[in-house]
Image (cartoon, rainbow, N blue to C red; front, side, top):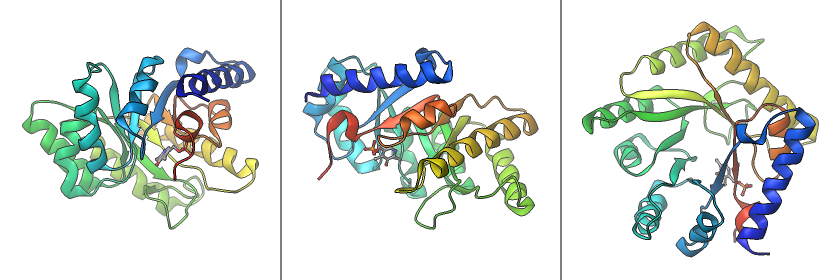
Length: 240
Ligand SMILES: *Cc1c(COP(=O)(O)O)cnc(C)c1O
């Protein structure tokens, strides 16, 4: 299957999920996650009409993004979806358009500072660790609706980050646990959505973006309210 055929299949599947959830497919932004894939493969995805690409490592993005821009593909938005070490915050603001993986106040402060130095605003999402797995990054959000300590800490960090001058938080991102039953995946996505609803009311921020869903679970994420899905393997094939 070509990248173009794969994208067509993903788009059909997005439309079916939207129909089940009574949503409009135009509400969903498809981010093609191109980690470990070549510039040639990325160009195929752009040729097929995609406008949003994602990488999970800063260096890999720094190597590939300029090559893609040099081929005349300047109107593509690049999303950082992986953990960013604070010392790489400057490069991230220089190369990426959206940082989906803001997982600490420290990183947010540095993103805001470097964006400010180049007279820009960093568009970002807060990554939340809803599943509670130790292997996952993100602000702690496991059981937030029952555990007041978790909720208080989250609210406090979100408030401080939202008050920074040169970073704009447009929503939340999470990753579902791997290899669990559908019910548990759905629960994680529903929890993130409820968290977004509560948080946006309390800190009086509009948080329209819900980034959730990857190759194995994006139809469920769409049913649970995702506005951004991050799809790698279903578009580019398995990674080796
Ligand atoms: C790799 C990755 C994806 C895409 O995963 P697939 O299973 O290939 O669709 C999405 N989000 C993040 C944060 C990733 O690292």
